Every structure is written in structure tokens, then in C-alpha cells.
Length: 313
Image 1 (cartoon, rainbow, N blue to C red):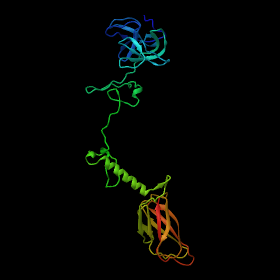
Image 2: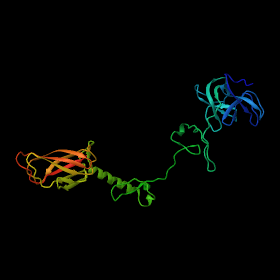
Image 3: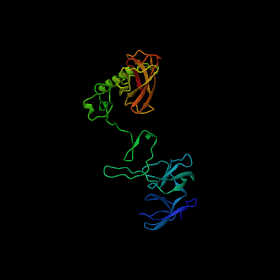
Image 4: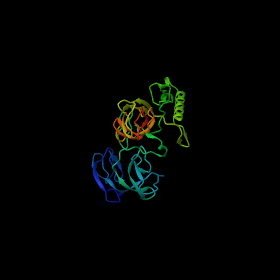
């Protein structure tokens, strides 16, 4: 009967493998590490400990700084080790030193399988990743179950080159780009993009100092409606003759106006009319804005066209 079991144990009955088993000495059987309670010949049923507090020999020179650190069993050498290797399996955690050559282990014989890498000839086996060490912190786990440094992808600046219509750069990987473009192309194109951006949106102290150029259009009205499908523009009504104090509604047709919540800002911008007018509101619906123009004169009617500018925000 094994004498190195220190606590109540969870046991299972297994058939001793080829070579037999020795009482108290762990052995590997499939995905289990087991401690037989008795010595048994191959093929004989034997009761084995699968979970308990046990005493086991450890490798000379190995050490565990504190309780709870992992303990590995090297079945070839018949001893516990403090470091995960390809020749041992995790069997539990360290509790304390028993004597100069033995330690007390919280033994758990249900082995967590470690990933087996694939080869050119065979698929791998799913499992936990092999333990990385400090030198592996910038590496990745390969399909062959090894930690490796990423290799050069072979992508060059030439592979990312593309000049679009002679203006700017498009950093898009295109097939065989290196045959048509060079890194110099990319650098020159990027410099041109920067120059265009700086010219369009000059800044000083983090604030934009230049003009933001909006898409701009024009339009001429008829029957108190005018169409201009641009983000901004200057449009002109037909000649208006509305009476003094009247409010004229101009229908601005614009597909950039998405609905009632779309802001539209307008201002009077001239025209042939000489009677004082005021643009007071822009009431929006999808595709339209009602521009209200007020005749401010108390005596004279409107006498010509009215130009107004607008911006659809």
C-alpha cells in the first residue's frame, strides 16, 4: 500500500499499462497521471489516486518560492520539476518541502492537454498553449506549437504605391504595384496631399485660418421656386411685384436637404429689386426649404429680382 498519501484521496480503478506500476510512484495513462496504491503487473486492475495531498521526489536544484506554484512530473526521470518542458506534465501545486529530496504536492492527476503542433504530414491536436517564457513576450504562437518572432512579410513601400489621377496618394495594396510605382512616388504623392490640405485648411496655433470651400451652385427662379442641388449657392428669383409689407415664400428645391431637421441658413445677396427686404426663415422638409422674404417697405411693392445665398449644413 502506498505510504506517500497524506490526505483523503479520490481514487479510480485502472488497468496497469505495459511494464506494470509501482506503489506510490506516479505513471501516465492517457490524459491522467495516477499514483497506484499497490504494485501491479501489466494488465492487472489497480486502484489509483487521482486527487490528494501526496509526497513526491523532486529534481535536485529545483525550487518553489511559495505555495501554489505549479509542479510538473517527469515520468522518465521519476521526479517533480519546477518548470514546464516538453518532457513533463502538470500534476498539481506546491505545498511545502517535506525533506531534502521530497516535496508535498496538492496532486491533481487530470492532465490539462497541451496543444500538439501540426506538421507538413499531420494535423495537430487541440489543447492549452505551451507556456511562454520571458523571452517570448513579443512572439506569437505558431501552428506547430512553437513561439516565434513574426517574419518579414515581404511588403515594401513599392507594394503600397498608387498615384490617383496625378493628385494625392492612395495607399492601397495593388497587385504588382512595385512594377509601376516606387517609394518615391508614394512620398511625392503624400507631400502633394499635405500641400493641398494645407492650402485648403491653413491653420495657426491649432485654429483654422483659411476658408472652408463648400460645393457651390447657382439657380434662377420661376413661379417662386428655384432649384439648386448643391451644399451652398447663390440663387435669384424671377422679378417680384408683391405688395408693401407682404411675405413672399420661395421654394428652394435642394436634394441635400434631408428633412425638417436639416439646418439651412440664408442671406439676402442682391438682385434688381430696390425695395428693402429681409430674409426671415427657412422652413425645411425633405428636398425643400421655404425661404421667407419680407417686403419691409410700408408703401412700395417689390420691383425686381431678389438674390439670396444659402448653406445646407
